[in-house]
Length: 296
Image (tube, rainbow, N blue to C red; front, side):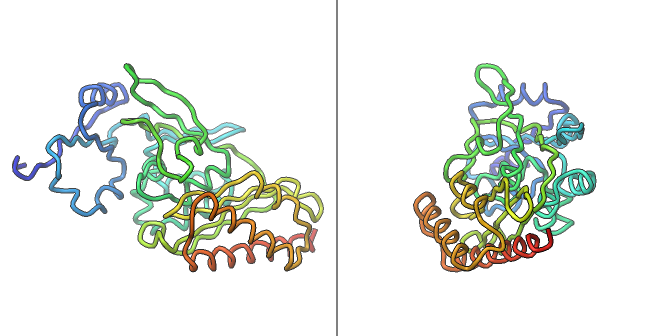
């Protein structure tokens, strides 16, 4: 390519050892990791590059990042496994809430390209996939450079800051995602609006619960506001778990008011449409739980 186009250099390591050598060699340059390419290729003015020292490291040929394994306790996916592949191999294995979350992400054609690692590490917006994996207590293996390459497991919530922005060390690589295999009596997921193209109005709600008779013995929920961050709180989970079913309108209204206050205090003001959409989701979820409690 012509030098005046400021085209980035593209590296294609064959394995993680070559990847490490590439990162060490170009650690002072601006480095982009190319997974499925769906994020980079959607960015305006990415090419020609505004900088002359841009390096792209393609992960396509690193077979270690494409592995899948499972046991009785968890399923583990390499970060280069596509969302469609996770759907197909995990349909009867993974919690239904995760399958539903994956199904809501883009079209099947694009899901064939989006990798799970790339989805978690997109820097400019927050995805419902990340929040659902937080809800399921998933972990990620992160490889990062600190004099030498280190490898460490983190809970997914720890790779984001309090506003939901990516908080990985420079030149870090998410190499594996480990998802516990769990059973729940109730699972709920709903997303309205596109997190990518409608980040100011999109919102999603994910919740899981274990129930005893008509009451929740353990409930957790998480709200994703792509332009603000993730809303997850132990206090919110405790209130959710303490609801009595069938739940009346007064308790629902109080619960919703607490959530909105928490969001505004911790993430800032949200749009009126996001608030309306979130209320609709919460009402829908409580209605499902009311019906479930009557059938138990």
